[in-house]
Length: 478
Image (cartoon, rainbow, N blue to C red; front, side, top):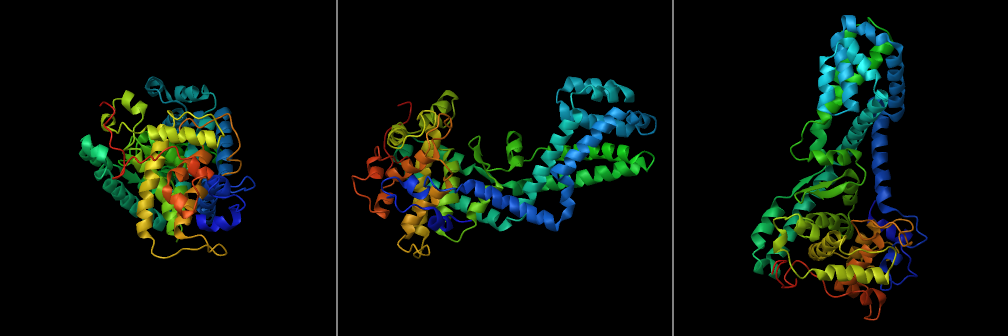
């Protein structure tokens, strides 16, 4: 899916873009939810692959639920005690994994080690519902395999986004080196080092771990079946070996990965609209966002995924009150003249109200938006080499399409409706887009807006954080 293809079917030309750009691109009547559509496309890619490779049905939700029921019956039957006579090692593996699914405290695991075979089985029976935890653990393996499949089908897009990330990081670096306040504060070298140290990862970095997961799962189940050698009922064989296989697969997946923070693994495995800058030095882009690069239009590439990538990069180089309280090393060298970010946020909240705004809380996200959009615009305008048009809307030129590229990404039904539940990190999509467009003189030029138009009037004051035109004031402490 590309943003351009959505213009003809969603844009409301009865709304003047100079009056309310978000309403123009994402009208009230539109059912378009751009990000959700990316999830649906990704899921279809996975489903289509599985249809051609039935072996992956073994990790379906239905199969997992059936297996969990089998394990419950097995635990209640008392048949497992027979294993303590001939196959005590399997009971040890079985109970260890079921216990680890349920608890993580070392003390209980130590008690488990000291118990007899029968005692270990009894300990498992005392758990609230060990089969439920097994079921959850098996779902984790399914999520990992699904994400692995999706990423394997997006190798070209993965490479395209990696290349784009490098280009945008270099673009940020060039603007940093020209920034008056950064030069005056002696921040350039330190900020440049922080910028260069940002790692970039996608699910492709986890592919070796998923391969270990699947091989560990298959190997453990095979060895378990061979060890039982048909001596016990099919029910016992199936239940025991499933638990052991899932436990070994989960253990393989949980091993540390050099390029990924362990605290991020849960969200990475969910693989549902995941994109962030973790600890200011690790940008992760999930499979859904990779699909945004599936376009031949530069306006989509830079206005959409390009803007999102640059936004994440800028999280390393913008600082709010929390960074100061946490004594972040680079925060004292940050510009003192960033109040314009909050002023723009509050102005937009007054002009286009939907929620109660807290410009202090959303400052870092808003600042990353404003700084990133100017930088990615500069890259885009140097890149396009021909006029890009939309069929039946040839009047839209390459400059206008760039602004559509960002706005379409933020579309979702009822986005302009008032709500009493704000996002405590971000301004609303409605306000984010209109703040960006109001700030950009290039937007006003592209759409030939008049000084009296609402979008122009919404500009609080010029706010440029990086680049030669950035304000020249000193850092926080001066």
